[in-house]
Image (cartoon, rainbow, N blue to C red):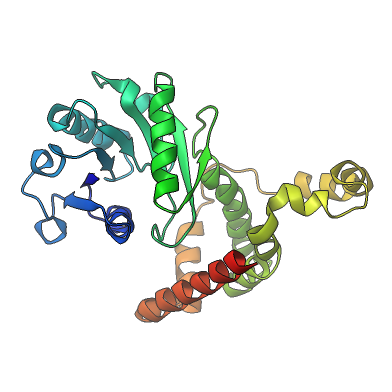
Length: 275
């Protein structure tokens, strides 16, 4: 299989590594010459079986690139966006053949994390969804196939809910950055890594989710009522959070932190596969 990738950032480069690791050809085009392997969008996609758009997360930019892709791509090429939040219906609105388009959203690092979302737009053909899911599976990943589109899809909606509360706890002075990360990574996120939230609470009481929630409904009601509800960062939060994160994890240590992250991810995934 040959893939064209438009956008040579972290996600585009991750797609290329994943595809090549499975024996496929991948060609990246990026406006930045140092990130590009092709001279143009057309050169990257004209012989591709599948084309991944992985440019900046802006609707106008994605729509412009998708027009260029569609003009150059083969008639039977699957066209996919790696968007992490934009509704696919909005992206496919200006396409001449929108039925072959969907979102295929990987997580970062693309070559390590096992879940990839497949999100159809309003006019995406069922055959395109099936083809996208089969591709994800063939790449050794597990597809999460949405029945309908929502902003942020599933993964980033779940992450966004936890992330907002993490921000709020630090901004309010309840706890510092490193302690939030410790609480999440060694607390609920560790359990969710092997069973997810629904199975967690299904197994939390002998009778399952119903009795568990009936027993703890007052506690959850109190928690839910006090959770952050803002949809914009509070004034001054970005500067304060950035400074706190840089203090906890100095930028000059980025390489080591990334290497440690990858080692831990590989170790966790290896243990899960063995189990």
